[in-house]
Image (cartoon, rainbow, N blue to C red; front, side, top):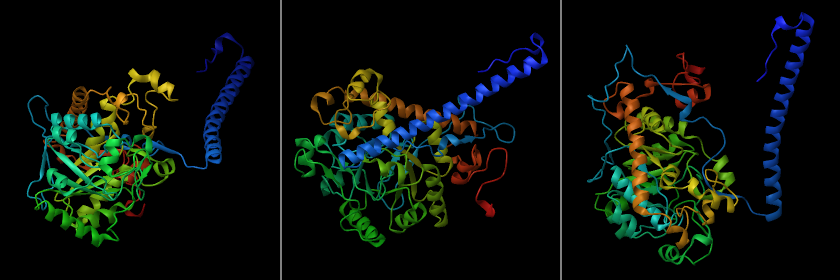
Length: 467
């Protein structure tokens, strides 16, 4: 901050000279700051070039995209006032229940909240973490998902509603577990790495993980990037039919895609017979993949929601085939905005792990010992997580109490649900699915164009009507 001297204390000429000095100093400080930022970027690039040249391998990490992109933060709600009336929270209900998979399945999924838990495998996560996710989801009245590598007894035993992921790898897959699940999710892509398969490095392939996946212990594993019996969308229809027959048409069939060509992918999934479509934006996390995938493949969640809804509306299937959105969901505001754009539910992954205790300051000293710090650690592939969540080390895994972890996760989901209700009531909605795009405006032109809502203070949606 610059303090300009009062003109009354010095002469006119002296004042102009002094002001000029202050302005010049301000300009130089601005240049120095910009140079410092540029230098930091250059240092990162130089370090990556040197690392690649020295090792001959690409960088692998976990977490999601870190680059600056338009997000739900760039949208705001238009709360009710005179033209619309808000709902009084103490006297008027705003319900949050959601039904998923009622297109063809005999037993659709009934949830108390539209916040679900995404698929994260036993292998990438410890058995204690998987149990915690099941416990937390059950307490909150929602569902959790197996992830790659099969179903563990801990997870099934503590999950009232468990979605079974059917992935290209087929690791741990068996028809009995398909029948024991409450729904089946066919994974065609993931937001962090659409077009790429999963990774599980050797240090996390413990004897139990190796047995479940029929893999050699301690050897790096890379999952296939597409299903072995998949050569086109017609095969998806055949696969959905097979799974329905295996489960006697009882279980809803989800289809999950990474956000790329969303309109066409959603259209094909619906035509193939999906009950639910899951769209995962590029902010979605992963346990391990190439950094170049995380940062340079896929599109943000914000436009992905709009494109998916447009596909469903064009087929007259919006709300008939449910849409779940994932990738970067952190708060009740994110949930509310996704639903306002047309989603039926959302799914959280990384946020759920943080709720369990990942990145906790309690373990900051140990994060520093492995070259990071609480809140910054992203080496989920390393297997040395001090919080005992993304590890197969039995001593580290013991640090996570599944009962306490489940309570923490349930608390977090309950907070998201309450925040969602608060925003819906403020917009005068008696059900969270009554939120609509007209309840929001965008703060930036990029967000307005991606989400298809007006720029705040105008009726202008960039890209609409040829503008």
